[in-house]
Length: 307
Image 1 (cartoon, helix red, strand yellow):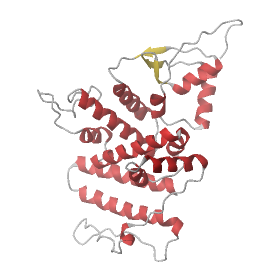
Image 2 (cartoon, helix red, strand yellow; image 1 turned 45 degrees about the vertical axis):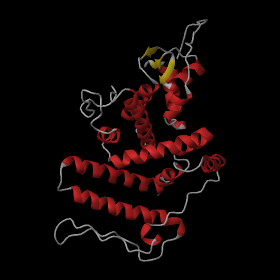
Image 3 (tube, rainbow, N blue to C red; image 1 turned 180 degrees about the vertical axis):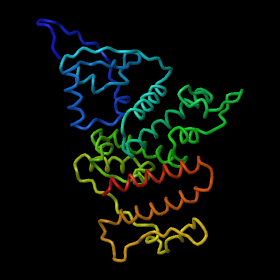
């Protein structure tokens, strides 16, 4: 971006809140460089968003503009609490970014926690919950749970929202020990199963710290996952019939599976189970089918990432 000789650029003073900044996954290097070139060539055309002088949207643009003395504008938003800011950041980014399954799980879990605090503090009122989903009676009691409302907003099952709460807790707990480890999880530089994150969410801080440090120094190894059918010596469940005379049978390999590929065998079993669930919902109402399909799609995406 060109400027007149001798022109002085006065940069605005903006507060960076590490919690707000840490909610969002970092851009990869290639995307960041593309943004940098765009701003250098055309300037910063979109205003940065601040709350009480604290930046809540545009961290990468702010960094680039500061480094290269590129002028920028800001727009102030009003919120009543930090939780409202967190929910705004999350919903704003989910609508704009192409996020991975682990990133979505983390954001939905953070949304859940912030929403729970707001509902508790405001007797069931939250202006960032969908008014068609949030129903409040005259005495302020909430008629539908936070899990139910968020499952409708994000079009996933209530069980997924509950899992995401634990997953987000574990990721943030790891981030408190090592921000670099959290970044590696969200960028998928480090692969860790969602079930393992759920497990860690209830473990002592010492174990979480140990896992975080192995992620930071590059020695982290994924835990062995053995299919439930093998761990308790039981046969896989019978296939769920779709129509009379028709059934879906999981395709299982004839030869023994190497230890390093056991996680893929587990994933194959989960996929079969998920498909059966979808078929069960096929003849029920549309909402149930959409929820089942969304969960099935997330399972497929997880397997794809492991290949």
